[in-house]
Picture 1 (cartoon, each protein chain N blue to C red):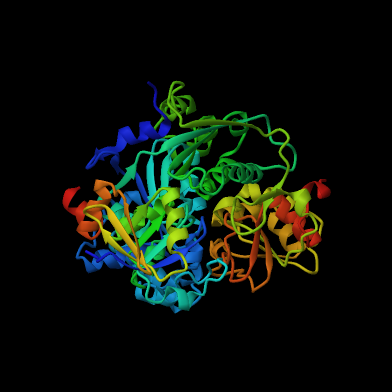
Picture 2: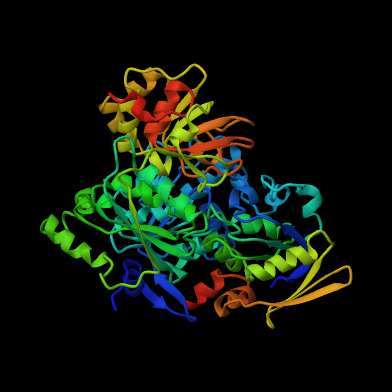
Length: 428
Length: 174
């Protein structure tokens, strides 16, 4: 019997099975940020275990509240910074070089096919876009990951999604994943790997695949996984060119991390996405999704483009195309947070930031801030935000606020009119 | 090891997420104790009054997919510093469930019918439950009514609870 990609990665990383169904895996990378890691660090210190298993496999960033907004967030940054220096963690990204974790770590080539990755952040599932097993964990699992380079997992079942057809104009990876979550429900993939395959994925950039995999957790999924292909190799090539004679050789090696044709899937779900329309959430759960046509005319107070879901260069290009030569509505304030300094610089050199600022957007530094209501764009009670982020939970972007999740194109169109709007209205 | 059991808080809703259990704005706290006043601050549940309903409760009984959303271990910590060491639900989100056992706390899953029975028999009455982890038995009581319910915790999870968490276990073994 064949194996799924997750089963192959588990087999290749298995250290111990202390009990039936419990797999302790060796980790290839442990990612850290300043919200969930400092408590792990202080706990390790209190236990007299201030050690790291391998500083070259630990990557750390200050991204949630940056620049620090108060003494408490300054202290969180300091704990992480001091720890990174103390343990000679070279891949530590402080302000000026920092970006949203799930954007900057892949951009640096830290996520690779076949890897096991954990982070104290639920959107770690993003890195499955590279054919990795990447899972969000709590602080205690993170602590053990830092200390010993291992993590325990029950072997998850896999749901394979075959996405047929091609996405129509004005429809993006975000619309696809919102649709999938609406079909599954927020508990529909709990303890499951979500494999995304098919012609829609084959045609997607790594940026779009990351958008898709990023929201696997919103259906409860442990990780969203795409099979490595030439798109993956092209993206990683600057980091792997010394390891392989050519790209074909890299592709051959990475093709180990593809599910076998006779692998056992718990379910195979096929969708034809050729007739998909732009989507957005309503209510307080990410599975509460409607077509934009059903939400059109809903007034918003704020538009936010950014985050680990949709703050990458491709997202900025799509939004800028809609915004070019337009102004945002007087009733709206709009915020763009490019997800990393490299994305910021690229957007600057392509003239995209001119388009955003001319339209009336505030462009902030890379940060997670507003997405979870911590900084840089928190809502007031009763306010509504059209957002390219990943969660519309009650209070998520500020107590009493309402968040409509949508694609960067829809968010840009919504900024222009001040009400939820299909981006096709502004197509060139 | 914690002592498990006590007065029950019934939360009659599925998909109660981590942001409802502890909002992100409190994640800048670097002690667990500081989270105490904010447990379930943003919970959407008709009739729920945070201060009144949380007081003197040691066990939560709820529906499906409790703890979905964020990976924040602050969610079990916010329960822990309020003296709630046990959550009984139809199901849990993966990360939350693991966080509970990693902290030496107890996430007990019961079939939907049993959860239905508990809500219909006990919700609305001052209810307490005794938890026998070794025998896998829960004893609910209220107003002279009692109900015994059996449950299973996987051996590994049981081991974590007895060890008081995963850090020392892993450091010794790996």
